[in-house]
Structures are given as C-alpha cells and as structure tokens.
Image (tube, rainbow over all chains, first blue to last red; front, side, top):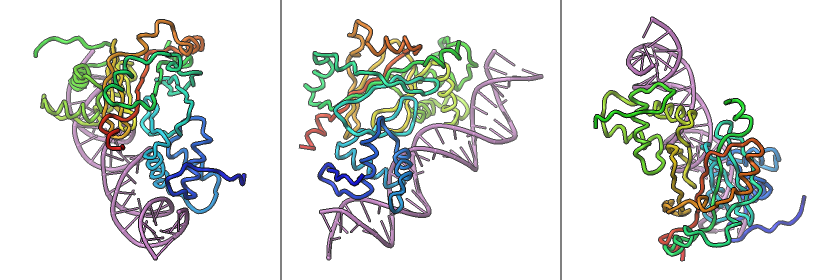
Length: 146
Length: 146
DNA sequence: ATCAGTGCAAACGATTTGCACCTCG
DNA sequence: CGAGGTGCAAATCGTTTGCACTGAT
C-alpha cells in the first residue's frame, strides 16, 4: 500500500492527479469523469475533491497524450482510458447498451498495411490508434423483440 | 420538388418526421440534432419547429432501427445517421478534430468471418453494423508540434 | 516565493420532460 | 374521433469557467 510509484514526467504531480492516474491504471475499461470521482470518494483519502478538478486533470492528461477520450456508442457522456499497449473492443447492444468485450482486435490480424493507412500517411497524417465497435442486439433483446 | 415519396412504414408520418427523414437521407455524413434543426429552418416550410421535437423524432427513428446514434471521437454531442447499405469511416485528428474520410472499409476486405463475430453469433448476439475510427494527428497539427 | 493547480459555485450547452393543443390515420 | 405527435418552457445532466486560495517545485 505504501509502495513508491513512478509517475510519467513533465507535469506537476499533485495528490489529485496521482489519484486519477491510479484509478485509470487499475481500471479494466474506460471510465467517465463521474465514475472516477466516485471511485476516489470511496477511499476518503484526505481533503475534498471537486468534480471540476477531475475534468481539468483529464483534459491535461489528454493534452499530454497519456489518455484517450471516447464515448460509448449510443451514449452521450465521455469516458477516458489510459493509453496502453493492448486494448479491447466491444460489441454494444443497441437496445440495452450492454457491452460485450471482444477477445482480440481484428487489426492485429492484418499483416499488410491497409489501403487507408498508407494513404493517410502519404497525406502527412500520423495514425496513433483506432476505435472499433460492433453493434447489434444481444441475445436477451433479440428474444424480447421476437 | 413535388415528387411523391415513400417513407418506411410502421409509424405515423407527420410533416416533421418527413422533414427530418429527408434531411438525414440527403446528408453525406452524420448530423447532430441541432444541425438537422437548422437545416430545416432554412427551408421555412410551414409552421414552427421545436428542437425537442427533433430529439423525439430521432429517438423514435432509432427505436425503429432506422438510424444510428453516434458521436465523433473526442467530441461530446451526438450525431445521427440513416442506416444505409454503404458507410464511411474517418480518421480524426486528436488535436484539431478535423475528419478525413477513408475511401473504403477494411471489413469489406475480410472475406472470412472474424473470430469475434463468430463467437458473438454463437452467443446469440446479432451484429448489425460497426463503427471504426482511426485517430492520430493531421499534417497541420504534426507540423505545429514539431 | 511563484505560478500552476484546486475547491466552490455559478454558467453553459446539449438533451429531456410536463402539459395543453393539434393532427394523422 | 382518439391515440399519438408536437410546441413551448422549464428541468436535468454532463461539462466548463471565474475567482480566490493552496501547494508543488
């Protein structure tokens, strides 16, 4: 619990920033600002937190290129995710919004560069990542529709 | 201009619903509720429109499975798109949010079912579509960073 | 010490909802 | 005619901002 941690360099590491970073690092999926906020509140560490601080920190992290801001398909609020070496894609039910994680990323199977990526790079665009979601209807919702 | 149109069946087709449908059909990319609203206001057809009506109509269309609700990567508001046979993917600049349309969809090149899709179908999930975005930095923003 | 980072509360923009009226089928 | 759709205004929700204070370097 008292383990010394090393945080990315280049910015001031306040208690709040550390907490947000820790939550993101231990998360298994993208989290919203409010989820992060609640997560931190549960461990009533010390002092108060403002939700606005969370937003500001997330913005900073994003500018630093440490995290990615996304949204769930069909949902409106934003979720944030640490940029990691590996990532997960999901299938999203358009009816109940349930998310089913996929086991691997189709792009890992594409050994040749895709046409698109080649083209983009020629145009000076640097691709740093991608986002993929399948959508449809889960077994439960399929059942209720029938 | 006075061409008789056929609209999807199953719901009441009011003037407002027709207008929203027409805008979506003539759109070349997903539109937000406000964009649709403005689009309609330009052609001051008849009577007033309420933005809330647009939202309600879009919700109805989505429930009917006629449209898909999405968001642009790194943006927060929602955009809506008619479900069509063909679709476009984009590369999004994380810095300036510029969107570059890609010429074709990588999934069209995958002749074999992906592992994921097989698995999902076995689990009773019906895949009706997908959403893919590449992200990174466009030539202009790359330049400014260097 | 200094300036970036933070808490608080108020502001904001996008989306939703309650209610009385209107219109499609 | 009647159920469902709509306009309007007020409410809600996620996110942002101004300002005075605090804390990391």
